[in-house]
Image (cartoon, rainbow over all chains, first blue to last red; front, top):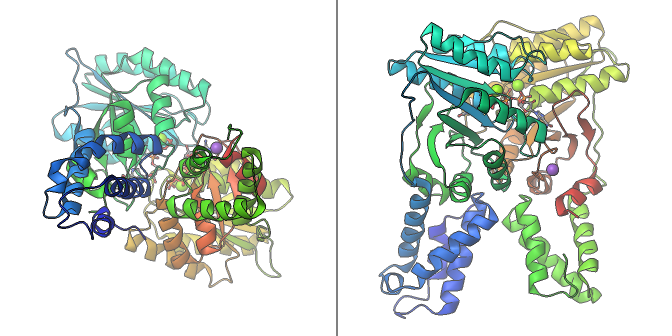
Length: 299
Length: 279
Ligand SMILES: Nc1nc2c(ncn2[C@@H]2O[C@H](COP(=O)(O)OP(=O)(O)OP(=O)(O)O)[C@@H](O)[C@H]2O)c(=O)[nH]1
Ligand SMILES: Nc1nc2c(ncn2[C@@H]2O[C@H](COP(=O)(O)OP(=O)(O)OP(=O)(O)O)[C@@H](O)[C@H]2O)c(=O)[nH]1
Ligand SMILES: [K+]
Ligand SMILES: [Mg+2]
Ligand SMILES: [Mg+2]
């Protein structure tokens, strides 16, 4: 169903070879094909527009008209521009000068936060840290048990003083966890929070209150790679409601093209730091902008 | 659609509305072409009239004539059986709980089958829902065989003379053949007791174009009979179901509007389209 951009452009440029110069119509046709390819990959419409305005200039330039294979040349330009936006400024997790380092997870319902908490715990432990997972989702049925099980599987400690299922104050748990971590010598605290909608003011305030109680070194926005056009609304709502420092893209083990990565990077300018690509503890990787660009383009 | 006359900007707004609702490029283009033809034929002049036409076309696509009844009633000897499937985190367990709530409130007796033995605390989550709404949960050991738990749940339903058995399954990406085979087996094993009455695919409204691919594969493996579109209480419109229904002919039967027990509603084509095209 999805044609790759290369196929589409090959068609567009079929009659071009030898002409030596791109007409405005050629450029428009090219822009149209790029637009469709990005939309089919779930890149959000406003981002597609801004992106195309950028590449159009380069597509008009000599590097395309003079190319032996203009279609390939355009794909190369698009790919480079994608990598640039997705790459941004590469950085690693920030650790606090004075432990514990606090990592807070936030995102929509079902995005993969709790699973990620386990993966982070596991990964950090392998690096010689002693992480503590903190159960601040006191809402979703059995979210606390889930985190406890995940922590056990990862071989790391959990701070879960409240039973959840509607009982307990997540802000207090978050606050108490820092004190607990300090006295028990945990050097990293990973705060799992309940899933929430961008438009849920009350829940967004709760996230902000948790943030203010623990002063995170990193707030990671966890987002499902399958998300469509809503990625922009959601990313903006979390940016404005709680703020975030980095992004984790989850469920990349599927076949979604993952255009949301571009939408979010473009709109927020935040680094996508990790890729979550499976249900198991080890299914966790650094984010690779070049792979993501190829994936979005279906290459 | 705020302009007074139909110009290219108006058409672009129509297209933008559909694209940003995740309707998809090809369905959007087809719809816009059809609208353009109708506008020419009808001599439509104002954005207002165009909007009415757009609504009409979308409602027709979503097809109000489709049978959206949920088949949960018991048979002579056995309960109605509903299998709930989908990719990870879409809202299967929550939907199972909400559905149990509706059925119990209607005076039905319900048994829940916790056939997700993989996700941490999945059975606990379902059982909590069961306790909340008044349904017994049949569960097995962590890491156990989901098919045998599903089988046992229906067996228990028969023994109890229950009206309906709802089976919650583990989230799985449609690309994982091993897990999809496992799901096929769950269904086949349950069918030893008799036919499965409903196979509900739970789709998250935030899902983009991948939703169609998901639906295709799940339809192939377990022959889905209905779709539940969850998380419509957010800003996402769930437009991908338009393509799903069009291609597979499987109707959306229910929508999820929140995390609470009562946040489940029948799918209404008109209301869905109104939300999709906004005000
Ligand atoms: N295939 C796959 N599944 C994942 C990945 N990350 C998480 N999941 C699954 O997605 C589902 C939801 O994950 P959770 O970690 O519970 O998500 P959450 O954001 O904590 O959900 P809420 O707390 O309900 O908001 C579970 O079935 C996980 O196993 C991933 O990278 N790949
Ligand atoms: N806002 C909103 N949240 C929902 C809705 N349905 C489910 N959720 C939430 O979405 C998250 C995932 O729901 P689950 O029922 O655990 O999803 P699942 O499909 O069973 O997940 P896995 O079994 O891990 O694949 C939870 O936080 C639910 O509370 C809905 O209609 N609206
Ligand atoms: K909505
Ligand atoms: Mg969680
Ligand atoms: Mg579940």
